Length: 310
Image (spheres, rainbow, N blue to C red):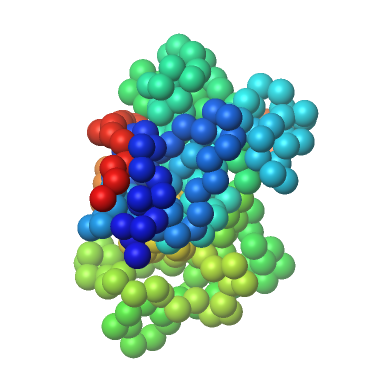
């Protein structure tokens, strides 16, 4: 099955990259003529029969993406569109680690010119995102976060229950949107996080209509050090499984912890430790009063190749 799908892609150049261990197969489609099916995505991302990755990212001009052609009219600088797919082939709206890896790939391929300190607009299914090149990585402005169920969450700070594998009782959680759906569970101690079994999809109740990423978070003790709040996180990604990192998940986790702590302090700088490394999350209020969420961290390419034929 996988060999047939890969044979159909024989000769296709690709790169392999990651951002704090969240890894991707990256393809360039400057003419917008390469239609990658869900089955082909799953074959390319398979860790034993394919290249391996948490997802696939296709670089395609925004003007050539069906249903999103008008993005380029409103944002003429957003020439490139991040066509992101989960490893099972399903479409995802946004990936915070992925957009950093994507910009790094565009730069490495010579498709963009981005000096340190300069910014680039990227089209996506979650809207246009601005990514700034840093000395040691990239900062992606993912836009405002939001509560999925604002009225209920405002009343009791939780809106759902999550039951992980081998848990006897579900834990309360908060649903956060970062343009894609997240459900955040706070755990009281690091040992519970380490012992967590994420080999199976956690049960979320009520069931989100389009699925959700589930983040499990433990605050550091003390939470704030030198003005920065520190948390530790593991995540089960929708359409993938447990990953070493999730950028939008780190933002959602910080947003949920910040929301729960709103009665004591409004913390704007967060450091989120994931199994694949460390990412930064900043909450910044714009002149219009909108609170943007900015994710920062490294991105690297580790390999290039061409899909072979059997």
